[in-house]
Length: 112
Image (tube, rainbow, N blue to C red; front, side):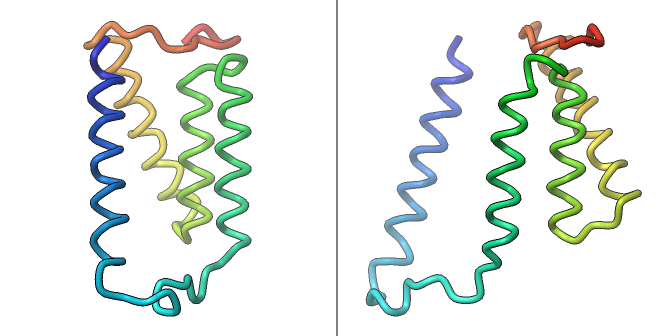
């Protein structure tokens, strides 16, 4: 039960470090985001919302496979490489959490 607590605490501490370090010696004009591709930002946000909506229905393995493939493709990775990396990551995380740590993940309509 502590995995969520410790990962959340670690994430919060890292976020505080990121927020505090670059803004300590710069003014507001220097902190402005220049050259942000807002189309990519919106695609990533939309894909995360869809992932959350379909996670229970489709299951962890397939949802993660599709999400990672899409995110890698948005980042500029070729389709074959994106799918290969997504398969390895989805199978690896499924094996780690479901088989080794015995944490129940959403099975979905396919049963795994």
